[in-house]
Image (tube, rainbow, N blue to C red; front, side, top):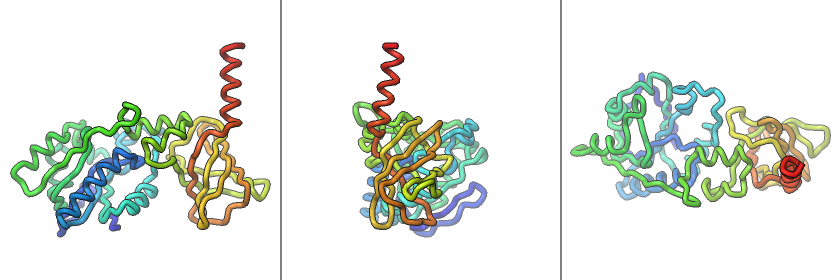
Length: 282
């Protein structure tokens, strides 16, 4: 997969036409995957490359100056996921105040026409340009009587509610991991580094500070290693992963580990219920 970083001041000329999915795609949940699959299938039918345009950092960090924003999927995780999904070209567009100030027509010219997209695929709620003035309907108007086209993917629901990154982020924060695969398509994972603890199977955990983590408690997790997965228990305290206990030692890894949350541990769930009973019944 080719990764191209785009800056509004320098847009490279693309010789080959491509079908491009556009979105932030935090978490690459099932709604995102439906959109990406549509773009891939269109690219195959047209006999051209399948591309994706995403953005970094999140608009909330730039427009709203929300320094506490946390991601479901950090940029390296997203790049790896797009590669697994068969993306040929991944455009990572720098989201800054200059980009946020683009008129919708400027976005279309620079980030669709100028990079030679022959078709774009977006979600029904996709917006772009200054103050989100552009939307899917405007894209359809812009492409009429031109060489490129637009497909709009409708809302995807789970339990009669829209699947969204915000919804899944709230589920992670609440520790509702057993329900997350219904929206995400898989269990939620973060990349971590570990330091040796006081015993061979005890580790101090360092998660990416931009990753979304759950409320304080103990969680059953799986840690991916070269031979497969190992089960362990992770302790979260005040929004930080602090301690990991494994049944057997982890092999060394210079690149860190992928840690997957399975569920809140039964002991942690029991303690939570006991605290709730104390509050309710005194």
